[in-house]
Length: 123
Image (tube, rainbow, N blue to C red; front, top):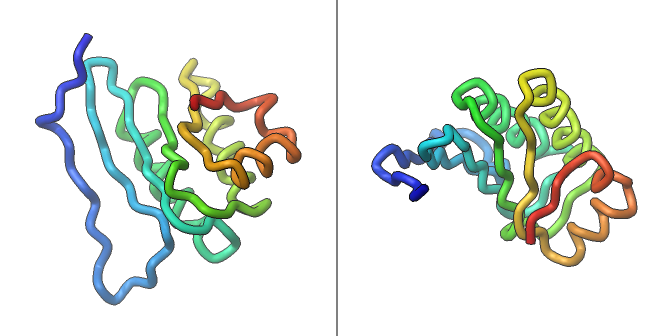
């Protein structure tokens, strides 16, 4: 089934808000999938922004949530914690969290932390 793009919208941050390095994009397909595209570093300062984006994607959808990590250059324990928290929020509904295209440094952090045992990685 082909993904429909007419429902694609970008959440705008206010110019006065600090840049968190996380932008949310909703790409709604026939299965209700949401994609959160993260960029830059995910650390103690930006992890709350990632959680906000993931929370909105979880609440708005009915299918799985995909986190595109291709633009992420660094992730720390706070960022990893947010990803696990999102997975736990989706699990009771029978939904999943998939991490797409992590760079090698981010992939290493995911593997060393053990997060890959509970989250799905998609190259």
